[in-house]
Length: 225
Image (tube, rainbow, N blue to C red; front, side, top):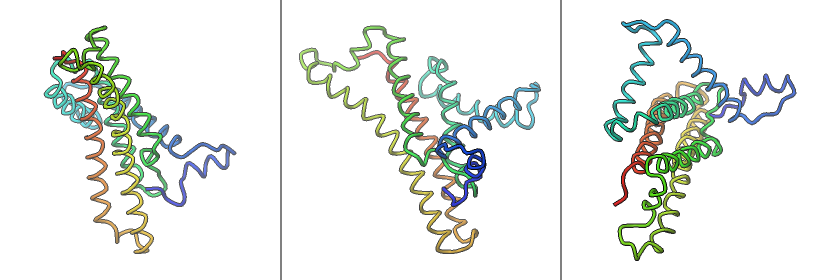
């Protein structure tokens, strides 16, 4: 949720820097995630505990879920999937803290991640199939290929719009609802039930974006029929 006072904006104003909040808070989240990664891997143990146990649980469950969908070949792009899930989830949740801002509530952040997924999808298709990847766009009937090709191209481009607007719309919407409730109630505890719903929505949206990315990647690796 975008609060009237964002602590990073206050710091930047004193430094006479003008950087959009979605950029500064995205940088902050990247630093936090890198710090957690270093903390979790600093002292690796056979019996994990603390940060190592938490990260292994999250990463392990996410990897198993991805392999169930994509097969063993999907392990090649798991670093991207794991990174995008943790980044989106943290971006969604951080805006619920007073003085912080959700980068995903700005359309530029979801759009940049959707474009990364779009580019990586076709990179995997070319990597696994080479020039034969074009068959994914030609349809099952050769003489209908001129009709199927533009339809498939439009469909693949629409994925970017779908990923972007779904994530942006839901996060911005929940932030607006929370802001209105807090303004009308005048107390922080009044919209507390909505806060729990916002946490749930944030997790669901991160999962959906990641799941759709997995499915797009799996589809690009399949052989065209």
